[in-house]
Length: 108
Image 1 (tube, rainbow, N blue to C red):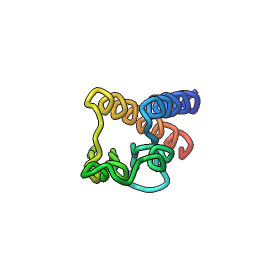
Image 2: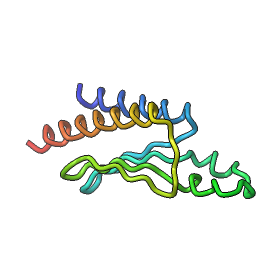
Image 3: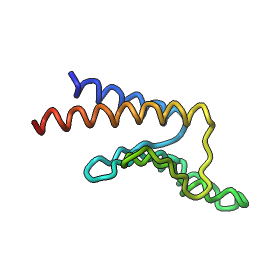
Image 4: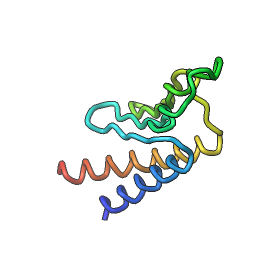
């Protein structure tokens, strides 16, 4: 049941990111757990070289770092709408919580 909910939430985040030409990764193999949102690989390859000063966002990303507290880190002038950022952040928090439940259920 928890695994199903985890997979469902992960798929929702992926679908939302794909709709907005973003890619999502959830790195849970070490501490701190990091959820990353970045422009998708296809978009990076299709960007023109001559787009002026806005090239940093191509290699940029937003990281949600789940350490002792949730910390958000923005790299390379990455830009994202506030409403989309909040949706992804809230779903990432839910995904993190589900991951912890699964982890402790399997550990004990």
